[in-house]
Amino acid sequence: MNPSTASAITRLLKRAYPDATCSLDFKSPIQLAVATILSAQSTDKRVNLTTSALFRRYKTVRAFANADRAKLEELIKSVGLYRNKAKSIIALAKALKRDHGGRVPTTLVELGRLPGVGRKTANVIQGVLTGKGEGIAVDTHVTRLSFRLGFTKSKDPKKIEQDLEKRIDPDDWVAISHLLIRHGRVVCQARNPMCESCFLAEICPKKGVK
Image (tube, rainbow, N blue to C red; front, side, top):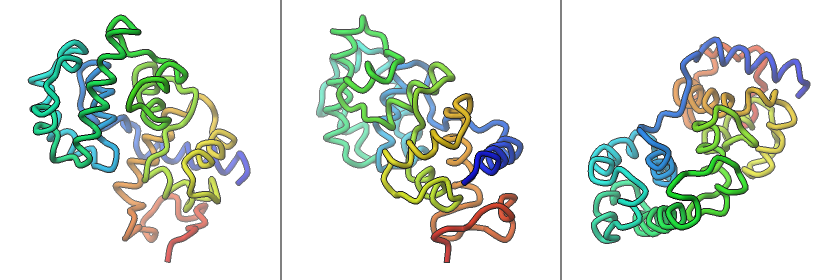
């Protein structure tokens, strides 16, 4: 894909979804971090339903660090992988309290050292908190659309991120994830992509679409 095509796709996505942002509900950096951890292999809608009650009970880093694991597991049970996620959330909060003065860091290096925070989670947290990104968050929607649109030939998140970084203006690294996610939910769905009515149809190679 040449740079002009990548720029055209980004421009059209921005025009279609000017309000595309992180769809997770949160009121503080720690709530964002927790919600992002919970979103692994779950939907943002399900996470938001779960965190509605969770964040009424746990509002601070200290509260999560001191949480009873069994009680936390019960509150997040509906998101799946709840035992591992509860363990990660408590460990994360303890690490923030111990090493960062109770604050969520905003560099990828520091975020990546925290329990339960992988590359995608770190990219999401940094992008949402700072508006700038050292990388690009790659979830299932970004993976699917990056391949279909021709940004990448890979299905590996790490390689997809690298390919996107080569083609997308750095100023749009945060936005492109939100834009692709929104388009993936509204139009370019996994099972039934609406290619006939898609505004990207003329420049999309539709890779992998039957």
